[in-house]
Length: 314
Image 1 (cartoon, rainbow, N blue to C red):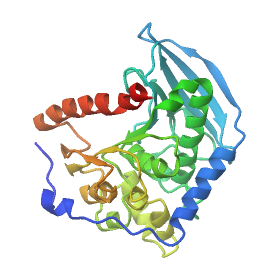
Image 2 (image 1 turned 60 degrees about the vertical axis):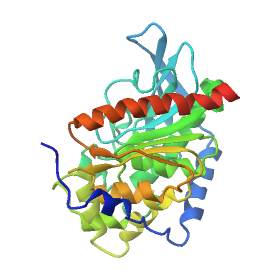
Image 3 (image 1 turned 90 degrees about the vertical axis):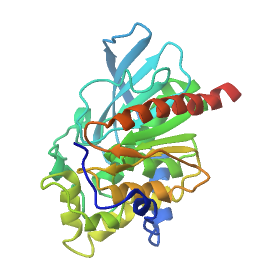
């Protein structure tokens, strides 16, 4: 049965994302500058088995700005039409991204503390991970994760310079929120692809979700003190979306028990109309409806047309 929501489609489309707080743009431009200035050395730990003879898969490790070890996968097809910087959610990825985007070189840095990036310092348990580093926006685990995305993009371009001609950044759920916060500040990114994103700002404080979930842990932690609200204000994908200046596919859902739809639409609606390519799902986290399955085919065709156009016209 399709999950329900108390908001109609029309009401969700009217939701406005948070106005960026004072210092928001400066904060994120400083984070990006630090990531680009980082003299990162990386190690290709090895090449992994691939189910396709036309795709090579590498496991890579690097130390991030604050010394946190980050593991990532990089999949390289025989013929590449560009690069995809892919941000993942709380699904703890355990396999390389072979099918993530056929024909593209795909980099998937595991979120610090999760997957290949598990370490002693950061909890891998979802609710504990979601509030790690809540003492300041700069130290917050998600801020570090966004910096890691930019460093991973630098590594992908260093290994395969041709990808720089045509870069897509995207992800779903947590990855949707992180990619939204990555896209505006990095002029190497040519397109966005954001699916059922979280980190939608203060509107999420009004919508409890499942106890023990990352979103609920973050919500409750933010409500503990006015100081904690700074994390919500600065790690705010809806506020960041206002600064997007590249074509971006965004697919919020009308119904979702994991990421409240008001937060998803706060992000989607905040992308400037000139750059926003919105398609609306019936269901977010959960089995897709028949309409969603049909729409996924449309989105795949849209991606194929949009994301290869820059390479063809170069």
